Length: 297
Image 1 (cartoon, rainbow, N blue to C red):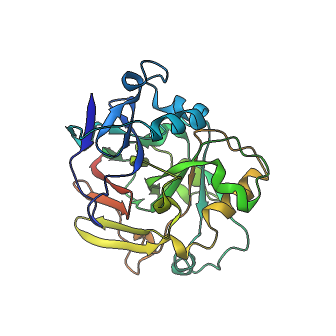
Image 2 (cartoon, rainbow, N blue to C red; image 1 turned 90 degrees about the vertical axis):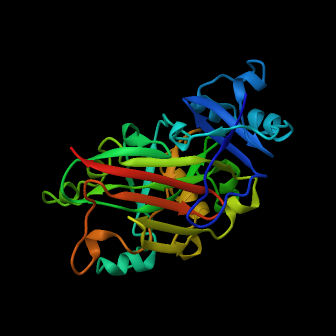
């Protein structure tokens, strides 16, 4: 069976002829020229249906998939696309990695990456309805890198060799929880159910677009609230991987949320937070878009 996504990103139509990996109805799928193909069926069982399991065999899978023909494919509803890496062992994220985002919070640009975690149970796919855990839920569009090979003390120049690909992410954040108490509660505030949307698929790091300067755009109810390019990041994907892997191993299938640009709701002169009925669209050029709607918990 072949599958294709019916839809376009806020930043323009998806370019079809690229190596992409997806989670379709909980099954591993890939596209290499046209629509998505069920990887287990196409490989006659060589690769299993679990989307997460592919990262432990990424070299073998990417070599096989890059030579496979996918055909034209069928249309599939975006609601069927789950997280490209649905069950990572570790999820890392970066605070204040865009200078203008640091400035809007009256903070200096960090001299070293500021790392926190999101817990894997917060992950959802390309289309999701998310409960507003508190009245102070904020948006943060991010480029997310997915690890392909175990990385320990990796040099910056070799960092991309350990990346399977990139995807679109939202680091949704309950700001009241984040700043309750004498020390910030980043990880808990950003890990409510549904607070880690990723998708719509993974764009392979072998594709030149994955490593290019990409444009991020976030729309709330059709109004642009964030727009920036990944070239503005204080620490690049390679620098972040080198830094984190120098402290703890990065494992196949782990996620790295690379930080958000300025434009978050909580840092406005009159703070704005997500409300029931809101629609959030997060798009990255060359990859695609994800959408969430929100309801009161």
